[in-house]
Image (cartoon, rainbow, N blue to C red; front, side, top):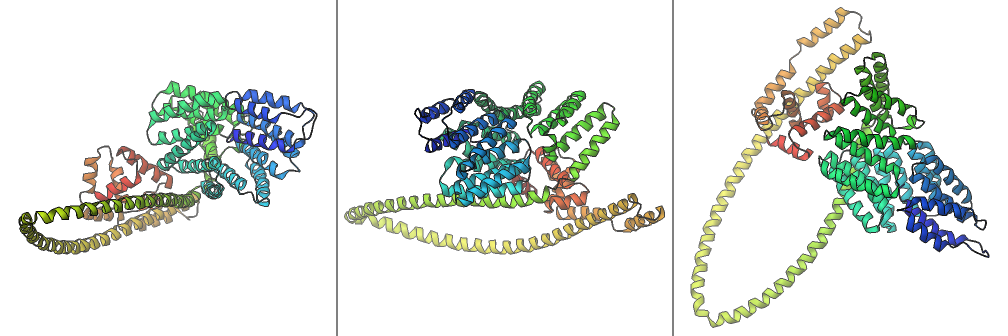
Length: 617
């Protein structure tokens, strides 16, 4: 798992401080050298070394606890969380009288519980570690613990809390001057940006993290980051680059026998291969990844099962889709997997049952999916997370500005030096000018002529400026008129949304048997029919304000449908996704998806570029 090698080496460095005097003391330096040699290339050799060391009778509790912690990290790397937890608990017991040493196995065991989806246990052990760190005023460990809190919330898809803990971790680790831990905290922050679809910024952060890990020689974290970097490239439609990054990660993780992250890498290859319609490669890689996660009883197994089921449905292999869902739901970790992942799997298997004429199973699957979907309330979290995200991006930009300011000062000093040299050269030139004064008369006359020309040019410029000022005043008046019409359009759109909501209220009353009779429903509907046709008014006013918008948009982007153009009209009015969703009677997520598909048809990836284009038409 994360930072495994650092944990092992640090514990081994601490261990000699507590060894008791023996006739033949354990050679910790030699042991440390062997662990360094084999930790990345031959992890099984580390297991043998630890087993041999534990057989000794001359080890005190601190040394034995350190060895159990190393043993647990070995199992954690192999995805055997139960064995890892057992050994972490042994280490914690042995470190009972040494709270500072206990912090590492407490953090490590929280990671193992997170992998099993047992977040309450994970938070419990993190809380114990945090209490020790605060009591000992150990800011380094406090920052690392905040990073683990962030990882928990990220897996739980509570990105607002994850971002907050990432920023707390980064703030502390910057002061502690620990580059490896700081890079790891920044990598966790990048994970949140990726999960919140800010792929461009996340990719930039991942590149910085990978450069840092490479410089420090941390191969494990380098390969793990490479997987997430490839995920960003996939969403940025750079599929070939993403596959190249994943191939590098897979080759490295195989050598290190980091099976859990290897499984994730396989599934990423499967996902991209499916996008490129390389279905055989996609199915093979999903199978490899799912097999490892199933054996490890990993919390990520539900999302991979859902993606696999969706792929089987796409290929018409519905029975295989149903089988993988049934296998997944039998796993003990399944109830602890994220609700959103289980919801996605239920939807996929319901679709498979529907295609196999098993309507009863399809209905049950959809009911489960709806129940799970109703329990998800991530929208408010994501809004707050985006606010925190913006603050961090502003801080990054501020640091870049400070760096640029320092560079500017250097450039200004260089300019002053050049000016000094120029002054010297001019002084020398003046001495020569005195000798050729007669020749300067023609230059003086020429200069006078140039001044007259400049004076004439100045008058022309003044005239142009005055004309520009009048044009600006006219433009401002036209803009005020456009703004007034824009406000009228927005008001019409909102009244349309109210009209649609009124119809929905009547439908809900009818379904809930609140309305007394059909006649009463008809009466309310007739009242609504008599109201003005706001949508027609909206179209008329919009076309009056922007007469060529729809024609120009479809001319430039022929793939757009009439519905797409109408959706873009609402976006041009600066209506929010939520307001558009209410107006069109669709969900907020559907409005976001609609906007994404339109951008894809227009071959535009940036929201800023998209908004600028609509405003310009």
